Image (cartoon, rainbow, N blue to C red):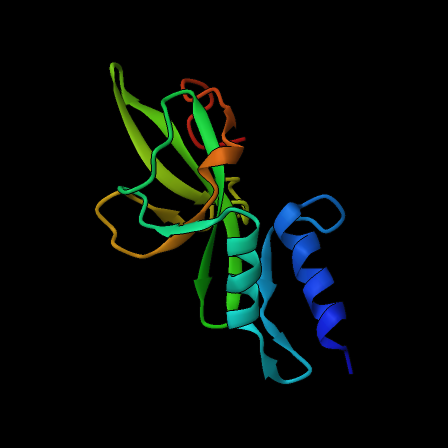
Length: 134
């Protein structure tokens, strides 16, 4: 059985993405729901609960985000896509992909699901090419 410290360390590694790949992760450890602990650690790492439409990400940038759903953390990015120049669409795209290469999960601005977003970690992103495949 994992100690609380070991679980916290594992969650830190998932959130920071330095040792463990950020992807889709179960938040159940030894049959214990650790969702609240994960959310607490997200907050300690600068992630704030917002919808896609509430996020402040400039065109040409992306920022990391987690969707918490059914005792899982799904990692992805809030980013922009050139929808129809000069129109751009802001959305969440999961790192998890379909066999075609497109994101398994896309959340558009009109969707009111909450994500945990870290806008301070925004990084440059080419939103003109390629649109979804990266």
